[in-house]
Length: 298
Image (tube, rainbow, N blue to C red; front, side, top):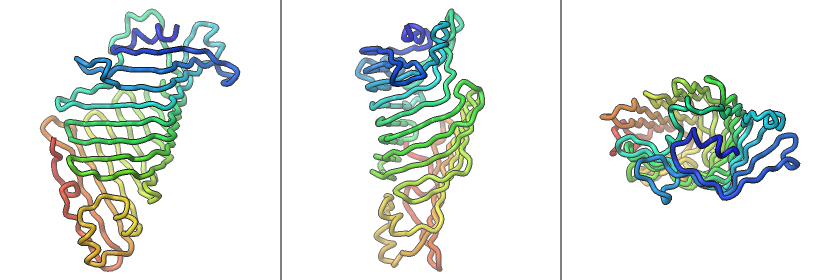
């Protein structure tokens, strides 16, 4: 029933091995469990070997009164262990554009009065062939809370994850580091804006402040950290000048600043600026390809 309601909104193949109803374990909500869910990626020419999402289970929670009145308002979504593979091709096409743009012919609306998404044990990968970037994470626990059905809303995001790899070109910037954060995003679904006010995130138990925004025309992010141990920083991040710094007796505390800027134009690539300043009379200049302002290879 629910799958049939959702099909007119999708433009890619979705398969579900089994669907179960549960009530007592999710009281007072009624839940529909979709087991062994496969969503094929949306790129033209994709096959069943091209996975956008596979998960052991997706649980949708409803108000049972709404179901009785044949109003299918999804209030929360839970996603069990699985894998999500996002991709942007060198031509700028994405594999996650799975929803139909015109649903005017659908007789009954399938509403998402969604307020919470909870993800557990999900392997996430994003590969951007345009900017030559790869991001791989294991999301141990992620909770998204907000009025998803609104055009504008605040999205509270709390997560614990392992950064398996963040790679730019041939350089792995971060590998096998734990991260956790509890931040609030401003979301505008009409303009495609996601804005992060100044917030604290932890990578390898080191505190960083992050702020920025993403919309259809711009990616602009800044990540800073003040007064952290240089030895801790070099231990957890891929810095090509670490041996030189050690020879210069580079130790003590540092300030770290990283800025990412992408105007999302076809003929321009993301720019990266990075500065590391040591406190107490020592200035360290990091001269490496990913740390100076430059267009990425792509």
